[in-house]
Length: 195
Image 1 (cartoon, rainbow, N blue to C red):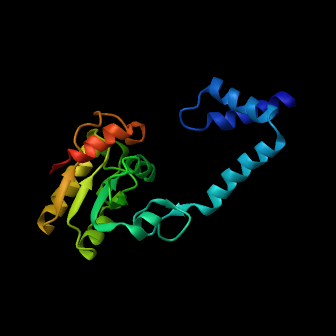
Image 2 (image 1 turned 180 degrees about the vertical axis):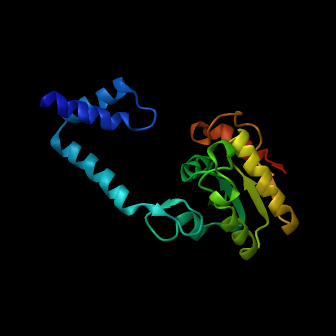
Image 3 (image 1 turned 180 degrees about the horizontal axis):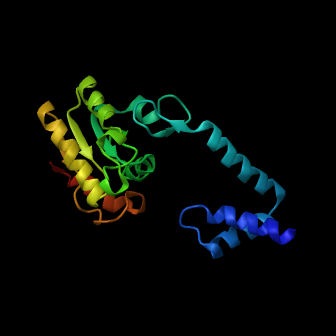
């Protein structure tokens, strides 16, 4: 029975992205060997985050309010387009960007049967027109899907007279934004180019 409970805990940790069996085992033993208060705090933090965190109704960022603090306080004339909410956390490490974000919740990917209507492109176009946006920065991952999505959106925005730029290739091709360091992201943002 005891071994079943330990294996169950290990399997829960293994279900997290990037966590293999050995790491999951270390996490499980850390919880078991630690104080009950620590385990309770850990469990409560997970439950509270799951219950209270949702998406900003303006940009799609993670927030515990209707509108995130970035959308409340920043310049709405520049929108940085990202594929997922976690990409905003990566971009915010730069600390020099003063605009807002737009989360697409995916990229165009024919192999995964995800087209333009399956991501938040219409909402982006509405925001660009309503807020008289001056520039849209495409910050999708530098891979085939990210590039295809950036080019597709750029074609839609060109007739609206909006400047469309793409992060410079300081971010390695085929990598994810969440793994990029601050210096690389800062350089990529600084050297972005118009599409």
